[in-house]
Length: 374
Image 1: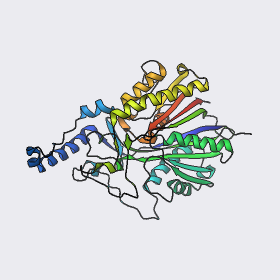
Image 2 (image 1 turned 135 degrees about the horizontal axis):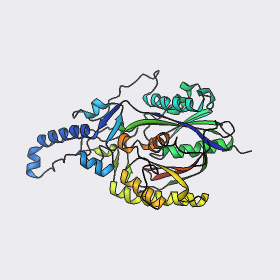
Image 3 (image 1 turned 180 degrees about the vertical axis):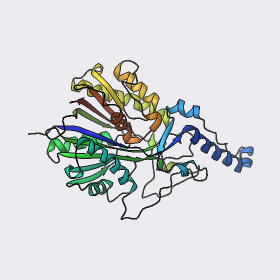
């Protein structure tokens, strides 16, 4: 008999340090002023364009972001560095990505009344892996005392929903009864903090999702009504940093080894792609958009989320219908929709329907329909 996968619990780790837009702008503009002064003669000759300052108003209008949590605040705000500085650890120490994943995992396990020994498989699904191998997931598995198997996967900002479907499929196939999906995102490490158009986008965080067979899950869980995944190749969001190209530029003459995107193009491409995916998924499942109590959307851009929610629901969504965590967490890649679900799901009643959706580089998108069981 095929097992039915459900979500038993989620967990969240939030870094204690936060950077406000005002702090970020002050740092960025100090660097801009110094750069323009250093190249004043070239700028005066017309050989170089002056850098433009940023502003709190520009950031909030462009993104809806007001602050972001980070693992290394002082170095990011230092105009001479403007990048996180996280000390390298010896191989015998727990890696920073595994450490924050374990923090989120601990909360998810506790909420479900489980321990690491109950976990049969671990998936680390995130955008920003700190090393190729050994897998972060295997390190998390070892630290938890879990058995079975573990592996890493990366589908950029859609990694969590892809991880959920992968875990659900493993439970259905009988390969595991309890799967832990962790999404540790230190996005500050791949962001070019000296790019005016994107220096405000990302924050750091970790989330965890515990999936189990319904037969062994606690009564208070979320049924997975259905899930759909979609990918479509695009260069509009790209990060070229990797082991074949180790340059880590901190100057404006070689910015393409860090995160970059064509923001307007991404908006035009992704909004209809994601809206259509959700509407098709609902139609295939026989669920009316009006039946959805909540949309937990990927937290990338407030305007993008507003338009997607409106296209799906047929009206401007209220905060209760489509909650936002972007304003205080910024874009946390794969973890964003999971944070929204973690913080804004407890008030739903048995039988209520919600939809978890992620979208990002690739392009990639994932849609997961959930029903509250208790």
